[in-house]
Amino acid sequence: MRILGIDPGLRRTGYGLVEISARGPVLLEGGLIETDGRRPLPARLHELYCGLLDVVSEGRPEVIALEDLFAHSGFPRAGIMMGHVCGVVCLAAAQSGVPVDCWCSLRIRAPTLPMRWLSR
Image 1: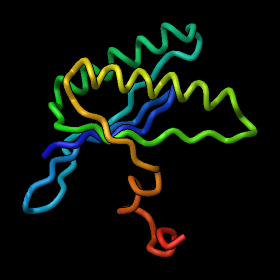
Image 2 (image 1 turned 90 degrees about the vertical axis):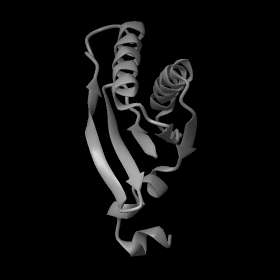
Image 3 (image 1 turned 120 degrees about the horizontal axis):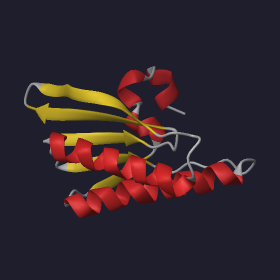
């Protein structure tokens, strides 16, 4: 099974394509989709959308694991921007026929974190 993990961001969206087999997970590709912060929001979202379509069409994932939206009450604008980004990710996935599963960031990063953090 191929899983495309996405860490959404307006300036930089990170991704990793993983193949799960009997031997375990294998990283096939990882990278960033970066947008130009000097451009207006609609243009940046379009840049992200086009980049995601490229990654999905080349990687052919069976599912997308999207890091769940997190917003801090002290920074409401950041939460709104992340909502736009997650919407673009979901749109690109839907148009590519790939289902999306949302995961909390701690669960996605679990293999790289010390066990004491996971018991919190």
